[in-house]
Image 1: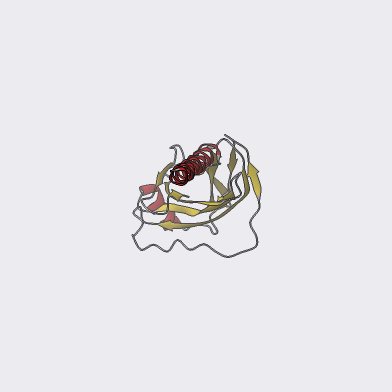
Image 2: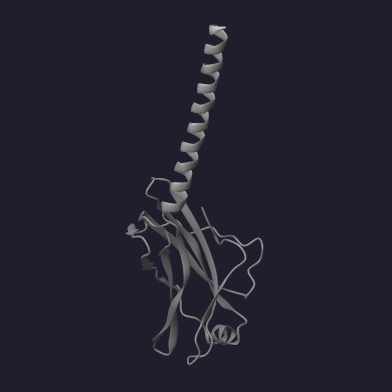
Length: 182
């Protein structure tokens, strides 16, 4: 009888230990989810730079850490092109390989601005298509960062930006694909 009681007590203790471990693990996951950095990329501003009657364009999306702890080792790689307003489903979102990007930290509830400059001047015909809305600028890329728990996270972003005539404001549309976060 004593042996059966001891085995029963031992089994109950094992079950309680497992339940406690499950609770501890769930509490850690919840704390990580609530406390970690969450970096998003949001619409920003843009400008036209006039050089000898030609225009160059730059775009400044905003990186925001919506989390409660800093995002460390924040790096952003981006690209820009002129495209039709609807990005095809099979668009190649690969990014240029270049020199190491700059690295920064974004504190909790803080922002940073990223600048992307279109690489060439546009022709008058191209500018007309942009003003009419037949074309837009496609700004896309990936932000990578480490959260406070040292986990590598990524945020992909993709905007089509329409730039109407000078006196009107441009508007930024998120595209259907390549907008996510891990």
